[in-house]
Length: 640
Image 1 (tube, one colour):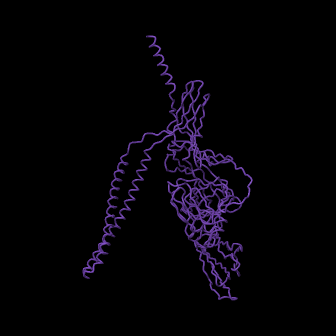
Image 2 (tube, rainbow, N blue to C red; image 1 turned 60 degrees about the vertical axis):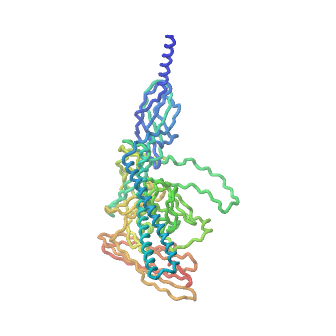
């Protein structure tokens, strides 16, 4: 019997030892050391220290982001150990206790719902009374035994009571609307608090085979999606004698569920989500198809990345000639949120956080475009769909295509114009980037300072670089469209600084002058920026002669227009002014333009654009004249 108990004790002891050897080892020292942030997505690099035993070891890296891309997990620093398996799981933590704020909101919501039911019942009661009064009035009107005085009294009562009821119903409905807003606000606040009570964490379980006991300093890396960065710029010009200062900045965001505490930060222009598989072009065979057959379109190159911080978007929609398109449907994907462009092609739309990441632009006769919400200012050019245009009747709005530069300067927001010109040297300097690495496909900026970036909706601004750019300053005016005079600056050789698509704030002489956008697909080396309106330059355009002759040759109307443009420089310094106007160009053989008098203007007969390059001394003035004649059938109307 004693021998039996001894064997039982030994078996139990071995079982306990075996069980203990199967317990997982938890890497307690897992810490984020470095984060490489892409335009969309990020790579997290963690360090962990662990003591391995001989044989199979199970490591658990816990308290990680729940949004880890599982096939991106990598381990380094294993020495002689080999990986048996890697698994990623979600760990649903217990909810926190209900906060006092949540309970207060819940109590107040119950009170608001009770008030809403009471108001709805009151409205329903008054509506029934109003219906009853109407029925009684009809019955009394059929009663021929009533005297005239009695009828007047009854009518007065019905009128007064009906008015009182309608006024009361109106007030109650207004109160109900206010109450509904309060209810929605309380529910939204409760939803936000409810989300904050839910805690979900990721954990990575790794099984390793160790030939011998060892101590490892391991490196764990993985990719996440809910992070990124987008560039923006500050462009400053102190005066027309100094170069432009361009500050290149990054806005970094992350909503991974885990804060990045005191980490080394690298910003990369790469995109790990891009499909890098090259296309395989096959033979295209022609055959008869249904008229509704849809051609497959090429995948377009796009440097636009979704910016989750944008709350509203405004811009202008134009056709491929630059003319504004009114009535374009702009809709946020994944939602019912939408708007339409106005007569000048302008639009504004609030971005719904619960909606999709793209705006969809659609218009009859034009190709539909879906563009990621990348900035608060998005100007879009739609391309005509020739097949669709053959099947619809396009209504003309009598609006001539506008010069693209004038359209840009006329708007409240400015934009870049690109021209070809000789490159000038510029001196860059950098105080915030440790290393700038350029590969074949992307650029990496290693930031000197360590950063702490919380997992929330906030933005962390990081200055990447700064440049001093020599600029040529010029004033610009197109008084037919806008009598304001704009100051522009032309900078060259700007593409050498690896600028990406992004918004830029414009500052001139210490004042904010508006926003602009830098295009990543520009291929020229000259860039023109509008620095805002200069009130010290006055331009006035007057119609000097306007008459319509009677029909000539039995069926032709002749219109002669003559204009005078006067310019005055009220500044204390000499300015260079580019003055532009236009003579209309006919698109119909029945409309003829003749007798163009352009004086000393540079006149382009193909476009009808007139240009004067003026140098005005302080307090100096200048006057320019031009005229033209238009002939067209007298029974027709033209958009002159």
